[in-house]
Length: 240
Image (cartoon, rainbow, N blue to C red; front, side, top):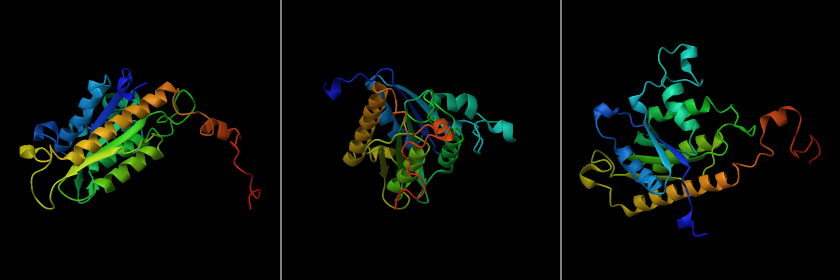
């Protein structure tokens, strides 16, 4: 089958923008780049959900519902988590501040971690079978560093990371226009290529997992391990 003829309908993606600005504070440069990836997915029949985290009251913490742990308000359980839970593809977008991802990005990663002990219907951790990617923008060095941090976190909690699963754009060092300001960066071939490759790789990997019933469920089921199944792990002293 020609890869261009693959049917991606039925796949669902969730894009989370962790800009520090709410919608009322103006446009998001990170969103501008994320929209390019979203457009490719939508053109190929993927259902896309978009969340601008700063528009919600997302409590910080490492529990699924922080209202049960002292927070007065927490939009995560009803407004954010259901879209992540329903997704096959999760893409986190972040600006760069002092060489790091945004503080909101860290909150999102911590809240994702809060669900990491939950299980899917095959007895694996809940993120098995989902695919992760990262989009980064800024006016300073840090695309690869931020992508490294975000993608490491996603794979650690169980998402599958395909090849070239990040893209980004940075301007000249110091104050200056951000992505999309007066058209800046929109024609950057490196950014366009990486955005396109990332998007297709995310769709391909999600499709591969779907066609194969998710990630294979052997050697990675917590309940089986707790019951004594060691999946060929050598006994102490048996390997010298």
